[in-house]
Amino acid sequence: MIIRLQQLAHTRTGDKGDTSNISLIAYRPEDFAVLEREVTAQKVADWFAHLRDADAQPVQRHVLAQLHALNFVLPGLLRGGVTRSLALDAHGKCLGAALLRMEIQQ
Amino acid sequence: MQTLRIGAGAGYSGDRLEPAIELARDGQLDYLIFECLAERTIALAQQARLADPVAGYDPLLGARMRGVLPYVRQPGRRRLRIISNMGAANPQAAAQHVLAIARELGLSGLKVAAVEGDDVLEVLRAHPEWTLDNGSSVGALGQRMVSANAYLGVEGILQALAEDADVVITGRVADPSLFLAPQVHAFGWAEDDWLRRGRGTLTGHLLECAGQVSGGYFADPGLKEVPDLARLGFPLAEIDPDGIARISKVAGSGGRIDVATCTEQLLYEVHDPSRYLTPDVTADFSAVAFELLGPDQVLASGAQGQSRPERLKVTVGYRDGWIGEGQMSYGGPNAVARARLAGQVVEQRLALTGVAVQELRCELMGVDSLHGSTFGAAAEPWEVRLRVAGRCATREAAQALANEVETLYTNGPAGGGGATRQVREVLAVASVLLPRELAVPRVHLEVCP
Image (cartoon, rainbow over all chains, first blue to last red; front, top):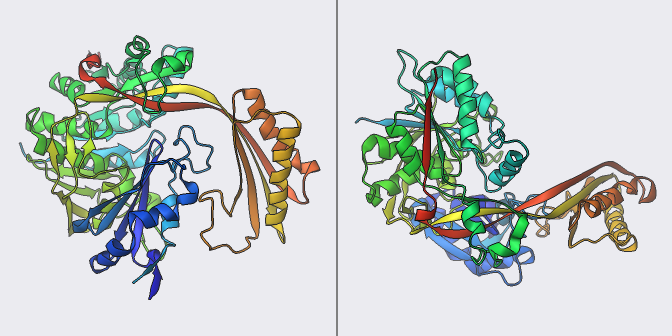
């Protein structure tokens, strides 16, 4: 069955310089295995590809199984970072919410 | 030594005042910490100080101190001490302001310390060959460089606390170090006690954004409910001598503290959780666990640490041109098409009138301004807001860009309304790593007469 991440998980987004990090946390521990299997670093990189610099470093995924959480680190996503960016949301604080629309196989 | 109680009174410079006062009054705290210094804040403060030698510190310092100083060193109350980086680019002037308020309040004997030594602008000017993280050299910034501040660790605050300061005002200090310092002071942890410093840094990291661990930046109606968000309580930690902390808030305040809020904040602005670098320790959060002990009470454990980095991070602030921005709203049937046409008109006008723009964004708020895409979720919105923003070398060009959006009123598509214009100078930041010995904290303590 295809579902959206919004049904399984919540996110929080942070920024450091030109790099955004988005945590993805399962509401229920039993759903974490699905997140870990489906939401790969590559899939997240593809999801935000239109926002990332062409020469950006790869997306990294860190796994915190005991917290049923994944932490994605996305360099080159913030147009130079909060102090320089022309973006309305220069911190990128709204980015995590966009990830929740991703469809995955449950 | 029994349990140490530390509260977070601010998560950023403009944060709410009354949750901090609530903590000072009802939190039975030993320490109240105000973290108020974002990356760019100190560059802005440095510019203010250049214009006025007694300026350059947090504009809310006075309001915050008037709110919480009445609870410091009051007979019959637990001793409360205040630590904050509200000194920004001018900790000494900030400390003098605190002393003046203390005199007004009759707090004779109150000890106020200023911690300096983070300002390394002259050190960098002496090393134009150093390379910044953005690839530029220090020398290439030339006169555009306005500030350079090293992230100091706990050392200066420890010295101030050892001198019995009631209020410690710093410039740039790493955010978690503001919280680690009172733990090291109270429990006497050794400089190389990396395990406990790692634990104390976890507590600092969880508290440093104040309301973000107690229900702020969290609510999502129908999915993640937060009670009484308008009365969000700021967090406090009860810490044992080994650095294990229980995170909670004042009973009766709004908000929510549970495993979900703590997990979100644990990973906030963290990259590799096994290597969270601070001036005091390389903290390892990879095995952190949270346990709900009761309503709004969470035990945080499992943090570890390794030796601290050899070099300190320095944030360099530099002037980087101007941003001009204009906005205009469109509503009703076909609003999106009219707004798109308006954006095209502005782009053509900038070319026709020769306005030099280095980088331009043209987007519709309500459609694609946040994510550059609707990820397939688009439905025609009833109203949209055109936003055009451009980077320019001069203020005049930025102003011209903003003006072009406003002229859409009488020259653009049908039904544009509510134009706004904004022009601002860009103070960008870059970073460089500095040998520790080149940024030595200095403490200046004065007693309220």
